[in-house]
Amino acid sequence: MSNKNEKVSVKKLILFVLCIGALIGFLSSYTTAVIVEKTAGKEFCAQCHTMEPMAQAYSMDVHGGNNKQGIVVKCVECHLPHNTLIGYLFEKSKTGIHDVWAELTYDKSKINWEEKRKHRSTFTYDSGCLKCHENLQDATMGSPKAFIAHKDYFLNKTKKCVECHKNVGHQNLGHYLKKASLTFNKEVK
Image 1: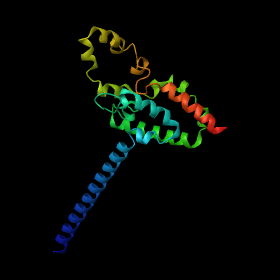
Image 2: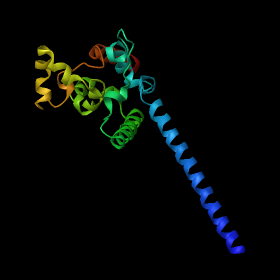
Image 3: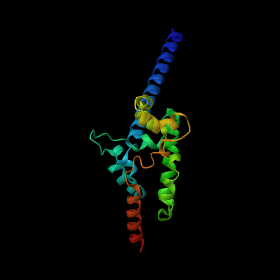
Image 4: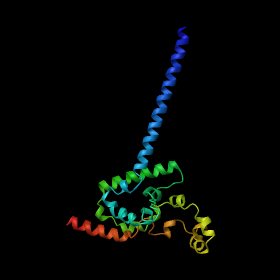
């Protein structure tokens, strides 16, 4: 009889452990999803002083909500890869750690933002563009003017969308960077 009771107790213990594990897994997944979402847009990204010019320029851009439809594209839609979930989370973690480190340790007055803009293709991902503009190739086929403009991209002669769309996402960014630089220089003196 005790052998049967022991088997029942072991089954209950295994069931209990599985239920606790499932609950912990669910709570971990939910918490991760909330954190990923809360750190995806301008409200989070612009908390760093160095990102203020980018946030201002973004707010003036069609992707930042300055459009008739009121559509707002979050920062991560352009600045993180969307090919795989693992790649997305890895790059989000890596970029987040770098940005926090830079905000705490770099002399931000020495960052040449205009020079960084020349390398925009290293921190902007086509997978984000194509996530929203997935019908681009079909749409360009019906419009000779649009097709000619995107032909090199579809023939893999142009590597990234931002090679042609240089100011996408941040309307008049150069103006806001210059303004921020003047303000920063006044604060330093």
